[in-house]
Every structure is written in structure tokens, then in C-alpha cells.
Figure 1 (cartoon, helix red, strand yellow):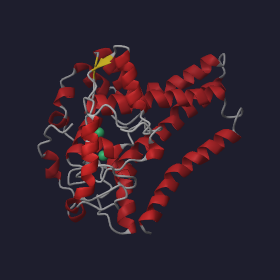
Figure 2 (tube, protein in one colour; figure 1 turned 180 degrees about the horizontal axis):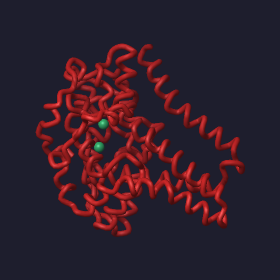
Figure 3 (cartoon, protein in one colour; figure 1 turned 30 degrees about the vertical axis):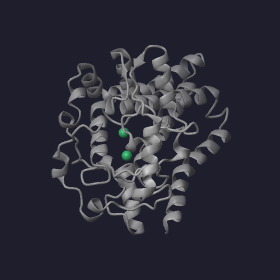
Amino acid sequence: MDGKQHRLFIIGVSVGPVAGLVVAMTLLWNRAFGLSDLVSLVVMYAVAGIGISTGFHRLLAHRSFKTHRPVRDALAVAGTVAGQGPAIIWAAHHRRHHRMSDREGDPHSPYFYGGHGRIAVLRGLWHAHLGWLLDENLSSDPIRYCPDLVRDRHLRWISEHFVLIMLLGLVAPAGIGFAVSGGEPMAAFTGFVWGGLVRLFLLSHLTYAVNSIGHFAGRRRFSTADESRNIGWLAIPSFGDSWHNNHHAFPRSASHGFRWYEADLSALFIRLLVRTGLAWDPVRIDRDRIELRAAGLSRVGGGRHAPAQPPAPLAERRRTRAAANADPGDIE
Ligand SMILES: [Zn+2]
Ligand SMILES: [Zn+2]
């Protein structure tokens, strides 16, 4: 498989199941899937997705804007509904990812097994997508990576009760379906399936795709020390987080889409919060700075169509536990 075939394969296996699901939803319309299920799916997807992208990622992990405590708590709860683990642990892993991106100690680099050969590439993509979460020895010390979040009593409570909150997020669409239908048990069941389970599946994989495909296939505007990529087709379902090369170039920016056509729903949501006085001080990157950094790319190599090259350190050496204890610095 060459680079282009790999790319087509990855797009196929990631978009294929979603397309199949859309077909199933069409065929099952008004039988095991109806308008209230669709609304439930979209609304719950949006709540959990904004919770992950705006809450966990931009607010907690990167401090891209400031907000009132109740808003921050609400975003942390919404992110917890997505079922991606406790908020503080999520942020610790993510800050570590930025600190050691595609190098030893990165919790989810697709170059974990090196970057050459079909098997190594597929194993690496699986590791970056989901496999890293199955590694029971993996831990990113929250006290080391996000002491600011650990100090917060509310965030600790939300993190400690993440299973309960996630389960409530599964049960809520069932309850709403039951109420809206006037007490039909079948509506409660389909609400649970579509607003709960299917939503959980879709958001998980589309978020994890930023970790796997987002460091493998896509365009590079900026020369960064990692292999981060921008993926246009993932922009809407990832709420803008798939402008991942932009993000690695300017990690604290509240906006991940830098051009008018780079859809970024999280950035729009943050703008709405600022307009309504619920948030302030979003981190904005000067347009000149962005263009200068992008222009510098042509002089230092890489490029918009740069092939995926595994960075040498990770390709040559397996991750060591000691790397996890390195000083995280102030990169978030
Ligand atoms: Zn990344
Ligand atoms: Zn990030």
C-alpha cells in the first residue's frame, strides 16, 4: 500500500461505517428511528461534542479563554457525557500529547510502531485511535501535567463521578423520548439507542480520528515538530478540532480554523459566550503571525502535501516509562 492507498483506506474505514449508519437510519425511518430520535441524536452529539472540544480541550487543557465557574463546570459535565474519561485525566493526557507530540512519551502517536510498512502503519493508527486507551500501564500524572485543574474542587468532583455523569447522559435521551411520546416504552428505548449509544459511538470515533488520522493524513500548513495535519472533512463533526496542524502550531488559540472556509463550531460557540458576557479573554493569534509562520514553511521543508514521515526518535525507540516523568513545561 502506498501513501495514497493508505489515505483512501483510512478515509474508507472511517467514513464507511458512518455512511452505513445513515443508510440504516433512512431504511428504519418511522420504524426503529424517527424524528424525535434524530433530534435526540443531533442534540446529544452537540452537547457532548461542545463539551469535549470547547470544554475539555480548549478551556481545560489549553486555557484558551476565561469563563465563569458555573459555565466551566457545565462544559466539564457536558464533556464527561461524551464518555472519554474523567476531565482532569483527559486534560493531563492531552497536555502530555502536546509536550511530546510524535516523540517518546506521546500517549497516542500513530508512529508508536514506527512509520514504515503496512503492518506498522495500521498498528500505529489503531494505537493512536483507540489502542492507547487499552494500555493499563498508561498514566499521565495529573499533578504533574495539570496541577491547576487538580486544585479545583468542582473539577475533582466531576472527574471522580465521571461514570455516573456518563450514564446519566445515556439515560437522559431515553427519558426525553418517553416524555415526548406520552409514555411509550419503545420511544424510551430508541431514544437510548440513538441519543445514547449511537451518539457515543459516533462522537468517540470522530474525536479519536483527530488523534490518529490527524497525525497521519491531511494537509500541513505549518512546519511543526510533530506530524499534525489539517483534515477538512472532519471539521464539522469534530467541532473544528480537526484543524489539527493549525492547533499544534498555535496550541492556545481559541480558534483552530484560521481561514474563513475552515469551519470551527467551537470557535463560534466561544465567540457566542464572549458576546453574551459568559466568557472573556479568548486567546487570539495575530493574522500576521499566522501568515509569517505559514510562509516560513517553504524555507524549512515539509509542505502542504508533505508525506507522513515518522519522526526519528519514536520510529527508532519504543516509548519508555521514564519519558512520562519528564518536565511538562508550559506548553499548553
Ligand atoms: Zn495532536
Ligand atoms: Zn490540544
